[in-house]
Length: 414
Image 1 (cartoon, helix red, strand yellow):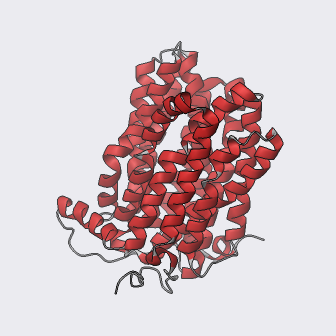
Image 2: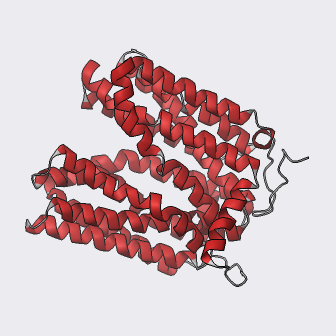
């Protein structure tokens, strides 16, 4: 049976269907784009440049996107973002199919894609609650969104590999462009709840206002700090050191594929559980889950057989998905609607913006002290940060909001 949020919330159903397909396309592109660069004679360095070009705009534009999404209709921002990303993928696909593509073309298009994505993410976080009529459906909606990411992480790479093998890199990017067309069609039919807002404040004031909303809530900035540690310290074990370890000590890409697949399956299990389980203290549960998620690094470097590593990573993935879903839900329940996109933009900036620091440092640190000690230290630091966050009363004692946008008092306040 379909979850109640899909059966009863037509507006969310439209939003979800369009985005679920788009997520698969995005995950597919993560596999296709490196091969596209290599297919036109690019080097490994060129692959890194193109990847960085798509990532860097978020550091610059993420907070701006949050301010904009709290000032204008978020649905329009999503439509504009999808249209830009459709155009970039179509242009890249045509250049590749015609044999005219050069590395700088793909890097420039990746930068435009990343810029559009910078505006999409904060607007989407703010729009989702406006497609929900019943407040108790909000967690289900976020769990389904998380499930689309988890499923896309499994289906997307497989589909991307098949398309590259059959119709080539250019054809695969054109197919990804088609997913954005479907998303735009769904968004055009979308009629979210309308919220009246006053006259918009000056842009600089809006930017400062977002920071005030973050700073005023102990539970927000405490969890954000724990998330920064997770993204800088723990995640490089997945992006950098995990593949290196698999190549040096196990069966390389085959072993890593087993781990990644098990991780994706664990994420799906967590999302299914969260469709029904609604913890009374969502942020407390998210923080405990973040501690489990931070065990990923030590598991990868444990020296266990590959199937055992995959099995334990399956369990760690449950923590990852639970932490992110419950965190998103907590923000949407407690942050006022007029500030939600700005606060979420700080969330995205604190994660996406700092990740390169860890990915750049992970290799040299592992080279100096050894890959296994580095992986163990990553988990120790990550778990420690999550436990410190859990020790904060405002995090541990934050209740659920009965009605979306009715923020409870900060439990740390006198």
